[in-house]
Image 1 (cartoon, each protein chain N blue to C red):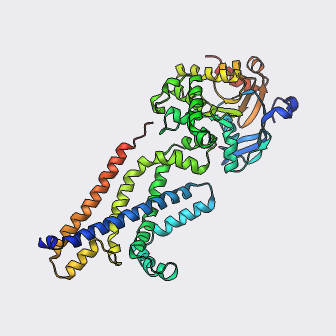
Image 2: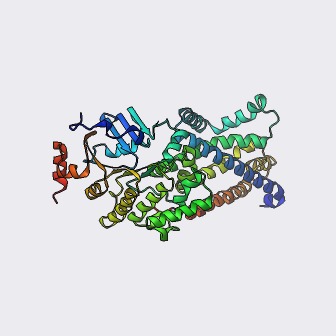
Image 3: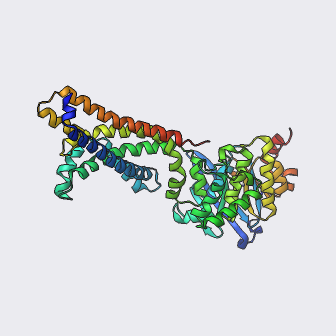
Length: 258
Length: 215
């Protein structure tokens, strides 16, 4: 199946935070995820790259069950993903998600966006929630915008608020689904810097992106997907300088030469 | 002309009757309609089925038939001695709730899916997502159709007059039975209805302007 054999036992089971095994998913006739096996260890930063339609966003969304899977299993911190309901909601609170289109709550201020999950899901009291929200907003550099509505912010600012909103839940792992793809070029860096900082702080991250620079500098491991399969997994240095699969060579030759 | 001045107390009573039956039914329809809309978009199949059945059944039944059921079946079998006001409110409220439900559901569909996905990925339950994130943003697009639904409800409330409720239609019937000129009676009754329906459309226009959500 995969053109490169990956030593599955490389990561000890005890530190595996997210584990997908034999995951399959169809969208109608399209077999969008084909026998995906992927293990993400605690503190690891995994960057998923690949051509459009390769299934990388879908992969990211299956981890907190925004997409259901047809077969296989996904476990987070040793617990299999439950069915839709309270238990799944509890588990989702531990998995931060950042979307391509930000998805900040349009009818709430920036501060309320970051407080809402803490108050309604974690049952934190209002004062503590506000304090934490302000700290996080300062950390991502949008503290001054706390009382504005999302639509009043630039894309880069909105995405940084979205990161703060996810961090406010103290997630065990953060999923980034093409976090910079909807941004103007000059705003991409401000978001990537926040993500770099998170990676340095030891957050476990799964990042679907087209930013090869970020993959090179922040990733512990690059996962290359094409046509619903994981074609290659390698350290970034090795993947970018010396890809083993032809599909990856082809992909890299198309994107690295302008 | 004199029919109004001579029977001012009756007209006033009729006006207040129409107003109260409309307000009570509107409140019931609003609550039921939102709950049923929640059922119809919920991930739980039995709730969805119940919601669909509710809307299909009530929206497609003639209102008069619902009144007949409310007045001649329900008191006989379930709650003997229920007042005509409550029975009329139930018939009108349930009937209108099916229309409210569909208006609310169309409003829910205008809220981008990403809003609900973001709420769910924060760990909110389905009902938290609906109540805190989706419904508040759906409200604005629901208001124009809702205003039409409540105006229709105002006029539908006339049927309650035929079922021993004192309201405008009932008053006009009593007075025309007594032989007063029907033209003048109708004019005054029509004006009373216009006061209520204009008030509703004005109120909803105000709400619409207030609830603007920037995107």
